[in-house]
Image (tube, rainbow over all chains, first blue to last red; front, side):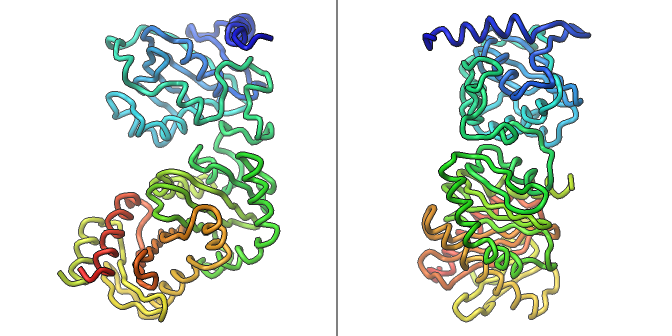
Length: 284
Length: 123
């Protein structure tokens, strides 16, 4: 197929299949069986050129309302059933500093296994500020989502990730996996061995393979290192190392129960750490 | 300004910081400290050993291989956060800090990195 035709076919297919009106003039954009409901949400934003207010609702309960124009997310107007949305809600216009928070919010409203619907309404203000806001293409890049891929096709899921490890998965699972997912794309690659999340991973194959090899050889020594840091023997503990932890790269390991997480970080990760840890522990 | 006065200013700026201590990792000694609570000598000794452990193998080796020598470490537990910074110019010089989860960690790291640099440079 000519690559130029793919986005057109994707649009046509989206119009013919998943879309149907549900109560409250909402339209279903992803079914519960959809492998990547977040991609469906981003495509809705990507197809919105004129200013609109889009209200997205998950069958699981969370809802968000976004002001969108020019394939950009201008503003988060409302968020229900989603923790940690205050900074984005308070922002008059979203900018690059909000992208990590916004990604987590969009992930929270698109958990797997539940349908996602959208309602479109007139924008609450001019909607002509298309030079600001967060481009949906940027969000898609960070989430490794191909906006032009055919919905439901293999290309709509990051090729390097197995089906059950896409980056938009809900914050469920055991504590270590929830901890890892809280970092979003800042945790470039990670792997868990042992415990309830044994074998869970995400990231480029080469990096994950390297982490796996390291854990094979040094897993016992790494666990012993964490033992020496833990206040309570066997307690949940995490260690992050970096040049500065304010920028650049870092390594992350954590242990909880019988599980050991090892990952590679990039960017301003220090500010993500306390909330990621507290949230993961709180949901335990 | 003395070290203790410098630490007092850090604690004043970050109410979620419970302890700031300057350590010599080579001898495993805390040389100066300021805290909101009473920390026993045993707890300070344990803290400096944890700083050494943080910058130890095997995670240290993986970090060197991945991005170069690490100079910052954060240990998270349910009870709180421990932050350890090593001086880039004097590798035995380190700051050891205990904080609550609610601290603005990015701002705190930037502040204590400046503080460590000042101490190590004799400023």
